[in-house]
Structure formats: structure tokens, C-alpha cells
Length: 172
Image (cartoon, rainbow, N blue to C red; front, side, top):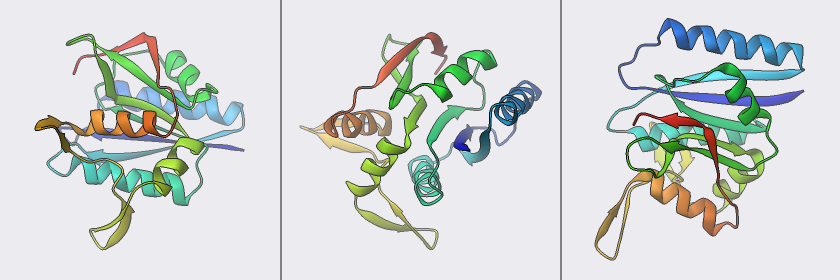
């Protein structure tokens, strides 16, 4: 049975009825197709990077076949998300509506990418748990790099291509 982890960032610590319905539909789809879809929620707060690192820890340790990071206010139909989840692509992001850049707010990664990120990053302690410091902020030549840019660069440095799904967009 294929194992998929959906990690949902909740900025207001609430879940809309629309999102709950979408997760229900995704779960039913998975049951019908021998895919176990599990969801976790994490706060979109000051410790956002470390919360994502906890999700990477879960995905790696439980050996999920893929992990999907997405915001709680995602606006798209279930079929597009299902196509992304079941895609053979190792990394898929979406186009950001704001400035024509790639959004790392919605990101699907295969088990292979998760494992390579896990092996290539240092271990840190966070909330009495050891996690890998995969998501982090950084600087390059005096320029601030947000966690999405740093993560994207890490994925590229590992030799993966991040496919942009043009059927979706983000209102970041």
C-alpha cells in the first residue's frame, strides 16, 4: 500500500469546511486505490521552518512514499491534488500568483528526495526531538534567503528538478 503524508500549514490554527471536505475526498480516493493518505497539521508561525522539519522527520521515519506540503487555504479541486500526489515526479511545486515565481508553499516530494535531504543535512534538537535542519533561512552574499528558496536550492543541488504544476496557483 502506498503511503502519502499531507502536511497542512494552518496560519490561523483553523481548518475550513472546504479543506475538511477536500481531505475527506482525498482519503476516500486513496482507500479506493490502495493508497493510505494521512494528514498532519502544523502551525504557520515563527517556528514554521522547524515545524516543517518535524514533518520531514515523520515522513522519513515512517517511510512515506511521498509528502505534500500545502497551505490550509489552498484553492483547487481534489483531482489536481490527486494527480500531483500520484505523479512519478520527485518534486512538484506550483506557480505563485504574486510575482511569477515558484511557490514552495505547495510542494510534493518523493520518498527519494526526502531521504536525500535527510542524509545531506545536519541534525538539530527541537522540542526534545532530533530532526534534520532541512528547512532553514540563510544568507548568500549578504542577501537574505527565505526557507522556500533555501529548500529549493537544496533540492536542485541534490540533482533533482522541481516541476512546476501550471494547473494550480497560490495566492501567497
